[in-house]
Amino acid sequence: MPNSSSMPQFLLLAFADRRELQLLHFWLFLAISLAALLANGLILSTVACDHHLHTPMGFFLLNLSLTDLGCICTTVPKAMHNSLQNNTTISYKGCAAQLFFFFFFMSAEFSLLTIMCYDRYVAICKPLHYGTLLGSRACAHMAAAAWATGFLNALLHTANTFSLPLCQGNALGQFFCEIPAILKLSCSHSGYLREIGLIGVTASLSLGCFVFNVFSYVQIFRAVLRIPSQQGRHKAFSTCLPHLVVVFLFVSTATFGYLKPPSISSPTLDLTLSVLYSVVPPTLNPLIYSLRNQELKDAIQKMMTGCFSAYYQESNSLQSQTPFCHV
Image (cartoon, rainbow, N blue to C red; front, side):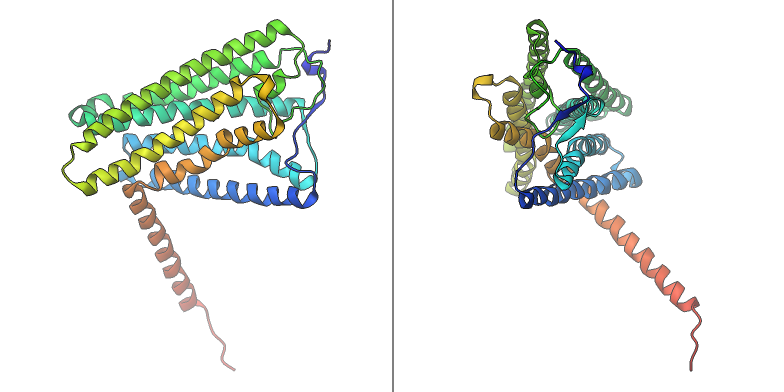
């Protein structure tokens, strides 16, 4: 019964056997990663540079962009490398690091989504108490709690998963290292049940946060329905409903992917679920949570206009200083 640490590497699941489809997956993931990097980098620089966005929501958007970048950079680059190089291997240490950082960023992200829901609830339903409930110190404490919870959760699951003895080979059947794929290789029944119990506890906490999100949005929608302006109601619903859809997509697919019975597991289903909760939400979050925010869009437009104006003035200045030789 060999320990997992005795395995030099694991085998990841290839997206396709044909070389043309592998290259297609590479270009698709490259486009996704570049879009996520550009959008989140733009949000980070705008929120950091514009003092009008130094608000609780701007602070949480900045933290959310960091988690989105972390999620994308943890799983997508390795999948791109394997598709480009026609390779499926990942080292033991690389697998452990990938699992830890993925769980870390995803746990922190869900906590931040819950905090941002609370921020919207206070802003709409209790606006007179907003400054008291969401002061700078309270926001810093909530963000620190989200990151600390993600770190402890990831450390606990990674340490327990990689302490299990593995005797079912080294093929994970997934395009990145995650807990259910490694548990299928385990030959320790007690360790398997212990990790399933930990996943159940995490899923229960996530379900509690999701119920809190739904309750908060119900209160928000009730407050929005009392807005006399139809345009104001439409704007509030168009902003809040996509938030709830993304949270539901993340929670439902991740919970089903981690707690579904092995009898209904298949490579295609596992691959589809993992993409839905590991790639889609971090890619959509900049669009739904940030780029739909009018204040942030105005700040981005202002920053881009200022950058182009500065570049144009600098180009004109250089041209005026360049000597010309007439023949």
